Length: 165
Length: 401
Image (cartoon, rainbow over the protein chains, first blue to last red):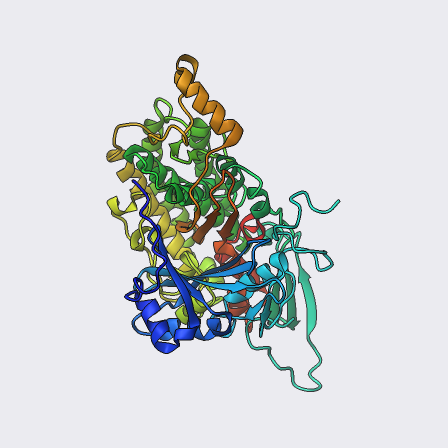
């Protein structure tokens, strides 16, 4: 099974319902899209992520009513350094889509999704804990896994695997 | 103590609540879960789980390992369903590589996965019943679990940390006589489920402790990210094995148990019914087990057989290369989800084209399921907290990673 090359041209992917819906709502919100290994990725501008999720959740064409996961990748030393990744699932349509927000290292902050899905709470706290990304509007943004007085954010790439000695 | 549900307001002068600490060393928290409770007499006003006592930084460790070296780490995340973790990770990496897996390996994976599900549900049933006060069930469940652990030991050499699935197939052919032992187990297992049900399902004490306790609606369950039997117990008919099949699950016929009530009893009924359905899948897998190799034909990725290694120079070279420098995986990213005994387990693997994963993230079903605890417990009695924690079947190793 050879890998099909990834499609990263937004023009070709306009037919996907989630892309079409977001573009119809606000063309400035979508900064790119990618279709690779049967998985759809949409790059969303950081200012619009909460509204975009709320839209995809309610829209009858998409119905992405379930938030599977939120995570983050650190691309240090590249800029924008962080990617926050949202995996949405549509239980009625049995489909997935991945939304990505790029954040620079100067101000790694993005709006919280807790008002759309209360289940985003722990996922966002975990990212805050391990990557140091701030989620504005989060009801209780405290460390989740590491001790309260821990220094640094362990999953950042400039944090040594053995920890600081 | 703010958290996701609206904070209950105390009337002025109604200064009669107290804070109670439960755990992290508490027998019914199934590991090291700490729960803070604000109680008004016997009523729970607020509840806040505190986690992280078992955090081992597995995601960070994965970034320093070769792809094949991550497999043994995945066992240790959710130690009650090691094979499900193995499966989810190897499926993700195989998707990144574009590897085709031979049918026998896929069927073996399904077979072992369903045995793992039975194993995990037996531990859940035994400990959950023990929490609520029914001790006998625990002994019965562990009797059957022992048999499954022996099967695991026969096939992988390990009772719990199996690491049996490898990228590109399986570690080894199943040993001689293995299928006969599984068939024997599958033959008598449904009678054993009857035994558990005789002890619990119609038992009035069990009913009083579980029916109408720790209710959750379908809307809340979806909004809070619950999955697995915790979601299906609230009436949402969704199972990844049936609805988004992986590893050949589309070839199997099974029912997805759903219950509407959303209480502890509904979640209990879902899991007990799943025990029977998993047993059916095991029998179908045994009946239809195809012949053929258990490893994909990908010399640079899959370790050669031991015999070939001793006689063929090429095999020895590949073996040396895979062990010393790993294999490069094409750049890209994959999110692979499987239905673990606890719900949606997802692996998000990012490759930058080298032999080590750039990022491995595990979507822990328990982490999301634990968030439903305040919804279930607030306004209820303190004695029901233990029943609610048991009913969402948490494994702290998976929550804390």
